[in-house]
Amino acid sequence: MHSTQLPEYDVIVLGTGFAGNCQVRHLLLKIPGIRVALIDPCLEEDLEENFKPGESMIEIGTLFLCKELGLYDYVVENHLPRAGSNFHWPKDPTQTQTTDDHYHIWCNRQPELDSTQINSARFEQDLLRMNKEMGAGFFKGRIVDVDLTPGDVLKTVYVQLGNEKITLKTKHIIDSAGRQFIVGHKTNNLLFEPENHDGVNAGSAWVYVKNVDRDLFHNGYDPYGATCSHYYATNHWFGYGHWLWIIPTDKYTQEISIGVIHHHDVIPTSDINTQEKFYAFLKANHTNLYNLVCSGENVKFYYLPSITHTSKVMFSPDNWYVLGDAACCFDIFYASGTTMISFSIESITEIIRAKLAGEVDAEEKRSAYNNFCVAYARQANHLMKHRAQQLGHASVMSWRIYLEQMWIFGLTLPIYVGKWFLDPQYIRAYLNQAPSVQRVISDVYEELNKLVDKGVNIGLMDIYRADQLFGDYTPVKPQDDYLENAKFEPKHCNVFASLKQTYFYTAILYILLQWKGFGFLGVLAPRHLYNFFSLLKGALETAARERVYLQQTKHIPTNTEVAKMRQEFKNYRYQSQF
Image (cartoon, rainbow, N blue to C red; front, side, top):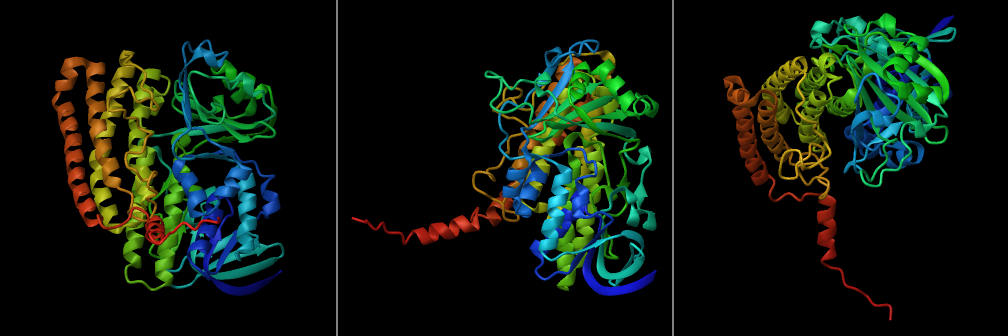
């Protein structure tokens, strides 16, 4: 055995999973000439043999892959469309033989923004190959150690390549090696305890099955209810203390991923941590899903006893970064992981670009982006608070989903579309307003717990229908015209219009919840009135900020490329061929 010293890199990425491969492609696209290397024990041809659950990519993750990474054609040609999210509760928990035995919230149309179902193993295999073709270095080896030197001093990565030990030097280290937690353990940066995650304590079991009889779920015929597929949606099935997903991953073999997120204080690990126990759980609680998995060929079973963790620091001033599962993980109910990865990758690339260019505000950006991503991780996990008690209550959970989707589509999505998360000034305003919103949402969760205890039916809220509140409002409909007018350049999307509407309709939903759940006295309770008027105040303050924004941007075209074409078109003259 001997050691070899190799040239230095600008960036070394640990791990070639989804997050690491996406980060490398983004760096190569955004920073010409950058020297990047990846390290992983697997070759690209090995990745297909590794078991991966299906990856449900919601709108932000899909925008990132297709628009920011330039993979639209690749995704369309190699992966599956996603037709929104469907939600199912049993009418009688003892009768779950068929889909008809459930109450449903069906996605009734193709969503305005694309989303997709990624076959993770295929995606990682293909993207690693693309990255190597673009010039990224790749070392098939095991990471022995990393030397995380302070500040801008070169870092060292020690790698075992067969019988040879090599030493790599780099200016920046990105840990995307998943639950190896290479940087996290080295820096004491990880938080695992439930008290650091709003008490969330959950595990997950899942299977990967192919050649299923998909008609056992739905035969695709729904002429009066929907104009989109139900099978290609992400389907959520609920019970006390747990929920399950169905995600299709391959159109040729009818491959699907079926898994459960279970809360340990309701369903202990010992009840579900083997394939036999998982199948028995399905048979007892979700017979339709049991029949579905039994109709196909089981590929592999996985169990993860704890899914939730986060990091104290995402992007360090010492030029190390944690990304993907190496940084944080939460309940995958809203596929928040790929949203977090999208925010993080673009932030990391901009930090590294600014530092390599010697820009004076590079550290300001690093600090702001770190604060934003730490806060977003905390907020994403907060969405899981008290869910163990509420998941199986169809009425209560539907109201909760409605509220949470209001803020995902009304704030998180436009922040991403307009790249507002890359503006330190906006980040400061965002972090200032976040605690008040989170306080109201926490109060709603407490109220919903009371309704669960009372067994109250306050109706079924449907996120897709426009007849739930008023004004043709639905949570999943963008509140600004950024899609119609292609406002995709940084800060062209009017995030204030979306936030103003979201504050206002949250106030309406909040007071309606008090009325339906607690009656006249609930509406007039001082705390409820305080929350209601706080939300209206937020709407008014955001409207004032919107006026300033519109004044500052009134001479800026909604889309620069379109404005240029229109200017050129003024010289157009039709020339007849006859």
